Image 1 (cartoon, helix red, strand yellow):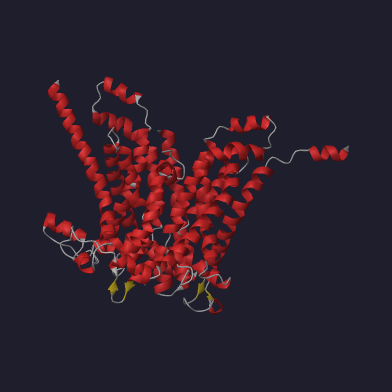
Image 2 (cartoon, rainbow over the protein chains, first blue to last red):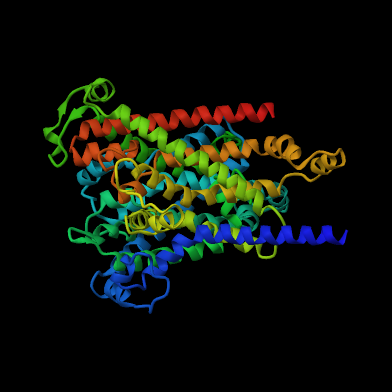
Length: 278
Length: 300
């Protein structure tokens, strides 16, 4: 019996190690990227790779002093924050409607939103390019902010609907019995209860817009360029400037990684449009 | 009196929900309709990118006809490459992801932290992921270093034969955690009783996996596959940054084909026609997959 226990313990230790190895393997490319941001050019290209080195901050100084990276961060922030807030404001009433009312064609309309969400950005980006030119809105923040709503609003509705449906309708009803209007019952009862879900949805939309490449790349040139599209600046005809690129990638991915870990509780339902609760 | 009664008459029941949906509906569908209209219009003209729109010549549906039937059209080859890309990413991601989810589905200290860390590859900026991939797969890069340590040979990942494999491997790294996280969440919500009953009846681990775990997980596996399928089919940024569809046409999937036709060959009409077909393919296949899943769910 004792021997068998020891065997089971050993087996479980092996599985523990295996688990750690698997997670480490998935993190490794990311961590190597971050470490490369602190390497000199020679160290980046060393073969075999250099594992131990004295960190240098020259690339970070470079992107802040010479490549104006703060300007692109500012653009990304403006566009992501505005588009996210607009999305949430427009989507909350619609979400409430889908979650709480019964009406004809409800699921049809909901799926209509979902199908629009599927449209690949790259497939309409050139049409949007012509539209932006015609409206004189090419390379402006507002155009990107509005265009992203096409994907963000359906996503927000599908995400938040699950959260609202998870709140017992009886709570609202009892408030209405006590004389509150439907709106007041929503504002005082349901809204505070769905706040966590709304915050998670907002963060995930923010991440999506912050990372978005194809629309931002083809619909901006100098004025409204965002962080992900700055990679073009690192691909020069004398080769790729790896150091500054790694430094930019490190800074650009840091807020997203922090945000994602903050909302990890909601992440599963976020990835599946609310189809699966984490 | 009369007025009083009229003012107390209830609104039609659909009015409330309709008003609440209206802003979202108006915004989303007007952007969509405007884009769809312009896209379709562009797909019926002959126009070089960079020229003003007034120079566009209407050609009806000839762009579609050319893409589908002309011998110089590479649309068919593009569809083949896209299918390879889809199968090359989805199948390994599902198998590896499910295996790792099973491994993680047990009690261990710090397990929730570990799973949280798996989110990182999924949320990284795709354009930066593409650039990282480009460096790691270079001849003197990380991947060749590992290959050489194990097999003794280095490969030319930038070449025609392996470029598609390289972008597939990047996708597998980035998105296998997606399968792990979702399937793990599913495994953790499975009921305990059937498994205990099976153990009492003397079922082996493999039997309870094949007859209990797998059928119960099937609907979730299909949901995950559908979500990934939509994403892989419209993936642009990573491939664009790594190889922009090259060398030759080795990594030209449908989204890359749209870009290359419109901006590299500067043929707005054919590029837009390809875009329309890409949209139709995605929506049609997804509808079919959703229907299929409903049916399997029903039988299970």
